[in-house]
Image (tube, rainbow, N blue to C red; front, side):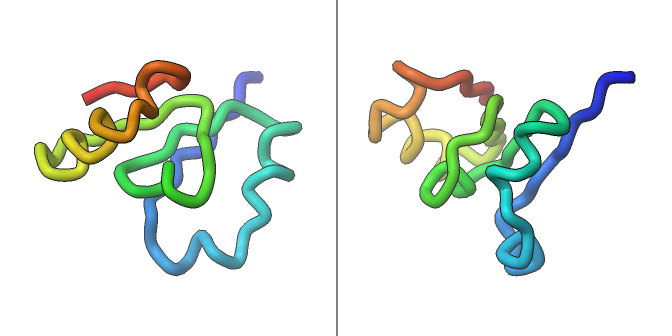
Length: 66
């Protein structure tokens, strides 16, 4: 069985140790999650945050979809 975790950037994720999830599956994150944590895959659909992510150079070293 393959396990994936899909995380938003809301306050509810603050109670979760995201590094512990890595041992159990692939981590997909959304939007500004990259500011605090580097998921296996980052996804952003909003042009504003997608542009911010691109401007930081994040996509050069990490898997990012927009």
